[in-house]
Length: 479
Ligand SMILES: [Fe+2]
Image (cartoon, rainbow, N blue to C red; front, top):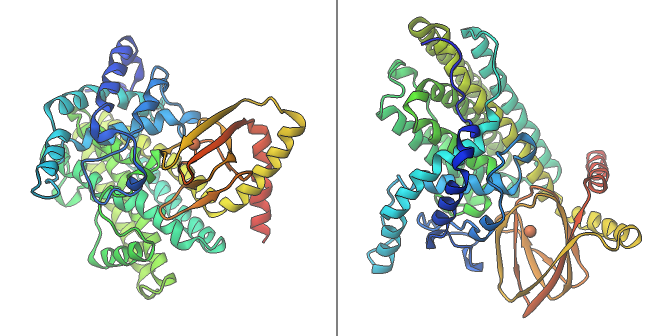
């Protein structure tokens, strides 16, 4: 083949039938496994067949306008990624929790024919909706060297990112909370990514590569031991998807992108590019784990730097071999396809870094966001007493499954008591008169701890929030 390859994901081909697809999405999300969480379901206790989706949000989420860079941290993207992981993992078998009839019913319901059929119907629509923005124009002529350089930049950027994140966690004394949150984003989703790799490999997607050159998400015994100890220290030792509510949209997306490509035989070469990008981000994450080990006195620092450098060189050399072989067999069209996947996955990794960084910054200093909230509240009273706000009246134990808002909001308690969280184990208690700022796109949930709670959510203009957040960051850096 020759010429420009087809765009990997393109919402334009979905617009004509969008309303039918949206109806199917709502039908899929109405399954009992996806109902909103009860207060005791903040952690899911390794229940693979239960995934709270907030299906009630689907009545107002607009799935007719595809995600763009500016909306990548908003609710439609989060909802689409949660739906996609459910749909993708319907194909993965996990046995019932025990021999009880309730456990068997739950297991069989999760994998019911109706659920599987709906999942297959909604995936292409949601993938084009959520990944179109990662697929830009790419007119440059590809070469082995430029593709290797692109992967090297991704690897270096990710390694530098984790170095900065770790320093920030240390300086804000949020090491255990932050590392736990990062482990959820990366380690807890690695198994699903490996399934996408394994499925693709078994179905011939990597047959154009020498078996020893296949991309992989390896983790040696030393790494696994460190991760286990870290997870225990950070209070997140439960298995797969127990922390479902704390997955960021972009973390889910990095997993779903691999599943999406691994379901398209015509995108096998693109999957190679995306899979090498995933391996680079995984290698960088392993570097963070190696850095965290000695800090938490789990390992010695001695042997780490050499191992990381060897692994990085091996990855780049392997990718160069792969690309050389593809160029030899398929010429520029082959390289173009690999680069499509590499570029999409690299772009997504950039969004994932920013989303995680903003979430960690907010979590690490949420107390200061109470101060910012008070400043904003005082300004509202003076300048905008009629500001747009939503008011809620909720009963005891009313639980809000984690979500994000598409604007900045204050949460201001009028009567009653609320507990508010954005991380496992976090409990920010808010009494009457107390408040906190929830910036746009920050993942959070809450529950009511009094017989009733009345609270308000004024919507705050971006130009009010930015200077205050910037000043906070400057003050914190100076300290
Ligand atoms: Fe909220």
